[in-house]
Length: 350
Image 1: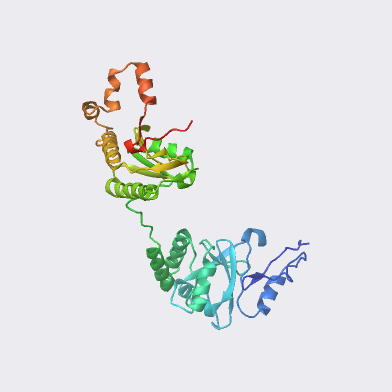
Image 2 (image 1 turned 135 degrees about the vertical axis):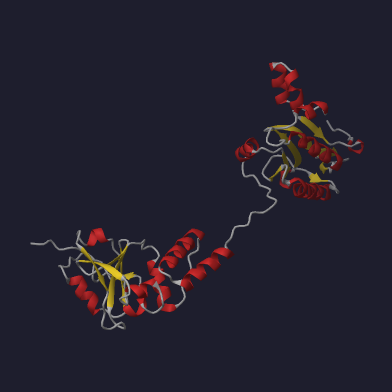
């Protein structure tokens, strides 16, 4: 006695739970139910779980009435149930298959086998029915759908996919300035870059005192200069923005993966009654350190010019004259510049 097999029918995208559920249906029930259904449906199941291994035959498809005849399709294991009218509505490979111009492969239960992935076949059927279909969101799925449309010669859908892909082309910006999210990310960016790096840290909320009258204007000038430098040297220098650091406004300059110089633009000034934070705009010093950092630029993939660094007093150019202790001290040494003008001298309150 044959054991009953469980079947599941999907109509219009929803499972007919009244047919499935926990009930078992004897052999032949599924085909009988499908003959009684009006409209088009999809049997969403994998072949290996529905039918046992069966013999197949290759024949020319013949149908007396193309308007109402239902066709059972097995596309790469996904089972679809549709009408001849849908399959022959447009001049495609499917129309050739089901108008007798091409031979089709059929198994013992009448499923017509198509050796393609069935992932997007439902979208193809919807396009054949309606002449239009919403395209997938991701570029990869559109490319997959385009491949299927080309295979089945659904030219209209293929054109829509190609037009969508052209609109979705990814354009890389010419000037990219990363905004770091953590100190670990900053270290990786600098360590893996083959370019010298300039980082501007600005975080106005770090101040616990009031600002002097010109501080906001100078903060903006620092940011504007950073943007101008990143546009001018973006192909030669890695520019990084830091808005989560502990300083208020500070420039850092890196070469060969280590910090070479630092320009701090803030200081505390003492008014007659209270402390204030002053932000400066040391434009000349910033330009100087930016030009100095260009000495660490790789030359034709060979690294920086040590002779040039030595002639200009660069640390890397002097390294071969130092012993190990001096070299370690050099690596740990950073040129730090704290901007302080004569008018900042304060009356220090003890």
